[in-house]
Image 1 (cartoon, rainbow, N blue to C red):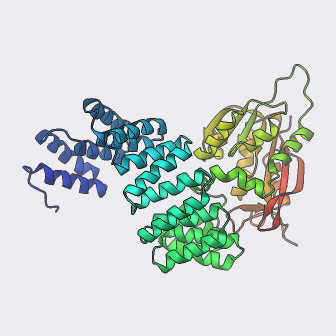
Image 2: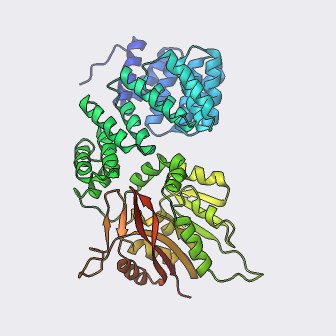
Image 3: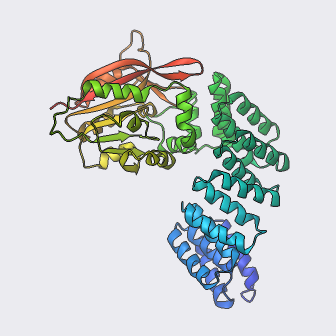
Length: 483
């Protein structure tokens, strides 16, 4: 049984409440906190504990309401401003967080946490140079804080200073060699910049230092796979699985290496994690690979859409897995619209929204959208989305139900060569590749489309992009719901 501090000692009780919250025992912490509040006057520390309790219980609005009241009562207390800035960052309110953090800096100019929070908030607002300056100040005040270092690296990278980002992380690793977050950030930075050999070296250094988690090993596997070193990648993924057996990213990549059954689609959490971390560099990276999918889909629409008559209403478009909106960019001058985009990645949707081509954007899994959406569409598109699905049967059946009679579904796939001498079906019609994407046989696609009640208007072999110096073969598919 837990030993309880004396009820006459509010400080001891406060420490006990903090311990219980850290352990996730919010049910035990709440009555103790209520007892303290009856014994002692309100303070920023008690407010902080109450806010932490509310956040642990999934009640951010309750936490924010309490902070609003506390700040209104003592507006010159910097600790409360810092706490509300932190909460607003967690609830994706960068403008409010910036206002609170700026006020905290005015009230307490030597507070490195306030400076760092202001930098993070400014980064969320796209003010990358100002963010880097604030985080640089925070790092100068507390050079060995790994979180400030990582924030500074993020701000410098977003501001186009990749070398400065590397320097911030390298210095942080020297000062805090056991900070696994800095190690992961350094590996990921090199992966994002296409320096896969450097990423492998960073991961090897982390392993040599004994600073390893599932993420270090998973990123090492990704970098090794990108270098074509697939057997070493499989070993790294397998080790990552031991440290993170429930990590959906790790499990999917272990499956891609052949060490686990693959399942019939990439987990939603995996896709969200990949593209949330990739959003700001997505377009530049794809353009460097000679990415052709938006242009191919545009050309298919020009070939297969009926010629519009003067009194026709432009056909609406549902863009599944819209990402940063490249399909809308490619098709913005075609007689189409309004455009409605769906994606699981909030950060990709933010990039798409900035282009202002979409009438609606929704953060959702495409299967959920197809199952619950009541509207029917004349045009549905999916560029480089079904490479995260193995079996297509269920998805195509849902697309059929969401298409108007005569409506078109245009999408791309990575191609798997047909199995010589064998039947085409779910067991051999697709496979999970080493990069975590599925490839499909054309025969399987045709069978799945017809089983879903869709006509095959086109099933063309195309080069989608280049990767690791080689062309990536694909399929450009045009299906229609019969009238």
